[in-house]
Image (cartoon, rainbow, N blue to C red; front, side, top):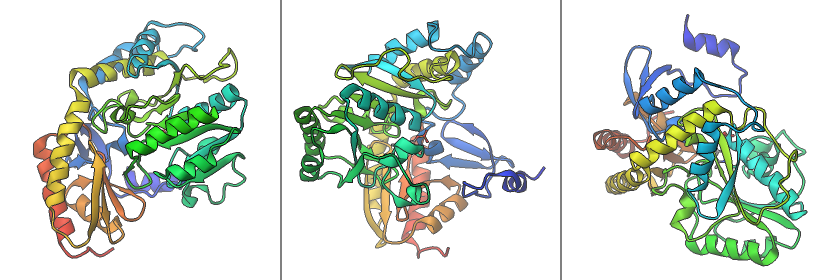
Length: 389
Ligand SMILES: *Cc1c(COP(=O)(O)O)cnc(C)c1O
C-alpha cells in the first residue's frame, strides 16, 4: 500500500497533507517508514510533552485496557478517583474537575458552566485567540480563517485587544458571564500575557461578577516551565481548561473548577467518554511522570538554553524570538512555509503559528544534544537566503 496515496484518496480533505509518513516515535524523535529519524519540535501540536512511546504511559494503558476501558462517570472508579485527587491538587483553589475528551470540549464546558453559574450570557475573548473549532469555542476563536463560512456562530461573544487593560475594562460589564484568555497565545503567534494584564483581568472579573477562564490547553503540563502557565502570575482563575498532553497522548480534556462556579447539578452537562478509566489511567501515569522527571523544570532549563542559542542566530530576516519555557516563536519577516520545508529536509519537524511565526513545541524530554541539532539546522536555514517556495 502507498500510504500517502491512500490517505489522499480517502481523506475528508480538511488537512493540508504532507508527503512525510511517520510510523514510530521514541522520546523527541519520530521515524519515517524507511527508519529515518526526525527531531520532533511540534509534539503533535503540543501533545507529546512526555515524548513518544514513554514506557510508563504504554504500561498504564496496557494494564488498564486489560482491566476496564469504559465506565460512565456516574459510577465511581479507582483510576478516576486517583486522577481527580491528583489533578485537583495541582492548583490551590481549583478543587473540582470535569473530564472530557479534547480541548474544545473543555472550552465548551467552561462556557456552559460560566453561563449557568452566573445566569449571564456574554463571553469576552481576545483578539488572536484560539480556543477550538466547535461552535462555542469557535465563537471565541478570533481568526477569520477558522470562522469564515461557518456563521451564524454563537451569540454573546466579543473580542478585545490582548494585553490591553483599558479595552478589557470597557468590554466587561455586569452582563458578562466570563472572560477567556490564553496565558500565552499559541496559535495566535506565541504572545505571553503581561503580569499586569492577568492581574487586571482577575480584578475586573471580580469587580463585575464575571468568571475568569484561562485556556491552558497548549500551555499546561510543564510546557512553559511551570505545571500551568498561570503559575508564573500570582492569579487563580475560576475555570482552567486543559487537554493536549494531559493523558500522555491519549485523547482527554479536563476543566478545573474554582469555588465561585455554582449550579453544577446532576444532568446539566455530561460526556459519554469523559473520565473513562483508560484515559484516567494514562493521565495518572502522565502526571506522575511529569512530577518524577520534573518536566516543568526541564522545560524551564532547556527553554532558557534554546532561547539563548536562538538569540545568537544572526539573520536580517528574523523580526523577533520570543516565548517562555519550551514554547517558542521565531517571527520572520517573510512567510515561514519555505523555512519549515527546509527544516524538514534537515530532519527537523517544526510548526507555524500563522503565516510569519515558526513555532517550536518540542517534547519536554528533548535532549540538549537534540536541541543543538535543532539550532544548527535553524541557523543554516534562517541565515541563508530565503528558500524558494
Ligand atoms: C489546541 C487548542 C485548543 C483545541 O483543542 P482540541 O483538542 O484540538 O479541540 C483550544 N485552545 C488552545 C489554546 C489550544 O492550543
